[in-house]
Image (cartoon, rainbow, N blue to C red):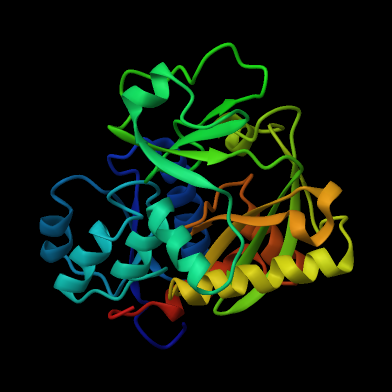
Length: 304
């Protein structure tokens, strides 16, 4: 960037969702990398005055490092569109669709992707009886990072013991046994397939605590399954009209062969923490962390 004024990049981080702490780690890592690339960086802990803050000192680009509701579901994207500040990741509609797991499944079905059986029920019902025969998973319709997710196994004595602050409605999804797989897509190009291994359920702690999970990249799976994972992730990315980088999570019941592979969800703003999957997959194909975040800034735009 020598010879010209560096771009001003606002890294939006923290926020007010239940994933605030993870977002702060993502934002700090991204901010440090962008400074190393020569950008003029301002880290903003996104509160309810975010629009006023941005309007008072508009950046050239907003790097959206927020996770969860309000930052990942189209709300902040709408503010940035209104202010005409180019931003990273997906736009308003695709962010909203991907964040709502049931709406995303409807899109996946239209592009021919296999998904697990699921129903939307009141949380009171999920607390008091089995909405479907176990095993099943109970999860918020519009949260990420495995926040508020409960696994009810086949021999469970009763239904899920949801927290008092659980949303009014939850998704109850047929549990798919087997292996946890994920694929990052960068501008319509799949980077790699990772298998995630844990000693138990792949919950919030397993995702973000050091040593909470082990990532095998490339995943030690048959070539045809790896190819299907890549194909499914790209189709999910395009079907939701994602932009920038997305990550699609899959589950594979290896006892059923290709028929055992299903798409779980697509994350339009994947984590960029030291234990995150996207930077690992990018590094696997020769894209360093600094180059990854630089590309995301250069890819930023409005009307996404």
